[in-house]
Length: 162
Image 1 (tube, helix red, strand yellow):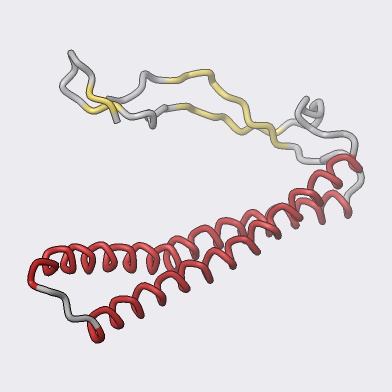
Image 2 (cartoon, rainbow, N blue to C red; image 1 turned 180 degrees about the vertical axis):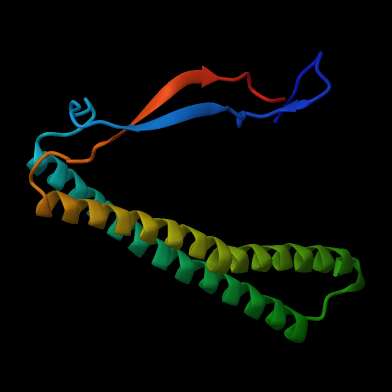
């Protein structure tokens, strides 16, 4: 977010854009330029993409184990220091600051191991299922698409909203 000098508003890189689309049916249309005609190339690309996603899921699993390990170590460290250590009076402030830092690290690692890890896993699983469905479609249907719907834009874009 950036404050503009002469505008009394906050501007972000996420601008609202308005566009109108008209969906029409046609009986004869050309295959779009973005359509990949080489099915083997598309299939090998999707296979490599699925392998990358599987590796990312494994990394995510080990990240979760790492976060839980750090959380456990910090909790055990706090318990051990609290039970078995007698701090002199001049280290009391240092001890309290250390407890606050350890507690913040425990909260962060717990959040990353639970909520954030699950968000990333759901994104990877969704992408994996989509790529698998597309790969199955490519393997099953070796002909060009028979979809009779084309999305055309009216080329009307309004000004960004501030």
